[in-house]
Image (cartoon, rainbow, N blue to C red; front, side, top):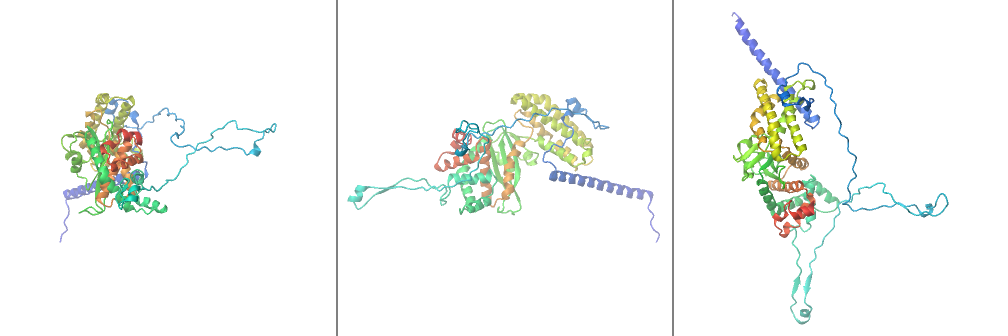
Length: 518
């Protein structure tokens, strides 16, 4: 049989297909290389997002930004600056601690004048150093003794002697006689402020020969949340929703025994906090089994105002219309930082991602200038419209042009441009009000204490434990936000709420809490 001889057109088609395949594989290799560099940077590189080697000096004015183009040849520029003078060390303020003085004296046999042999007397003292001594946690047993009263006349003349007993306050938790307000405050403070899991606290109690199991402590925490702290949480939520500007974020949580769910499935803790314009800061945590936007919508029911969030889609399509979502420029900046981390250092300066990063850096630099000048919210809104908004408009014009010509939408730079184009409306909402912030970092900082604790205790056993943890974190973080010492505030609550003091009188900004717990 005669072999088929391919025509020139067929050979051209085969070559075209091979070239397309080579181009596709090349793009895939480039993408995988970028991901490798990015992951290596995230694992071994510095935690700071400062990846720009071309600093803000590139942006002397807006015109220079708009006309910026990749340089044909790299030039060396000598930059001079003044280093900030290091402040002198300040003596620690130990005035609030009791002081024990140790006076060193010469023995009697050595108190002789080396010149005349006469006796020496003490004529002065000098403090050479001040040490801070540590006294380990001390425990004591408090016995609640009830007094019984009888009548001596009836004892002598009657066959019935009435007995009257003194009133004794009920135990903090029924059936748990050893728990006191201070002990429970310490356990809660250890776990939710110091990130010390209950199993480690159990081990420490064992060393003291105190039979206190982690399960017992967990039951105490849940009881505290359900009987006393839920009312406080509800009042703080009402205060939070009464604000006009809030921040929101969410983080993962593993709960082992959720009905209808596997132990390995992710649950979430949603975090909500007031903005910097409020006089009564509130930080609330809300445990939910999922990340659907309906959870945020339900929690924020009754809130009408502006909500700082990241670019998560659920915030954009599931919230009621009376809530205006404000995007986070830190997330936008982070996309360009990741892009630069994914490419070799020697070509970063010429990469267009550097331009995007410089735009973001200039916006944040302007915010620092506004803060340094001490502008009011109204003044900040005015200067933002004059200086920051034109810069943001120029950024999105640049991003749209780069997006139109970018051949690799799935690359790190492609994803950064896609994020910019898709998030423009929400990112520009920051210019609606001078009280708004350029980033959602305020809420991300509130996620960090929970994440640190989660790293130690890893998971919650039941949904009840997850709910209790969310409320406990809400109480201690709101206390910290209002300048209170968490342990002192927990003790303040546990000595009042069980005795019937209304929760509204125990809020972190109440006069009594501020006076006793700061």
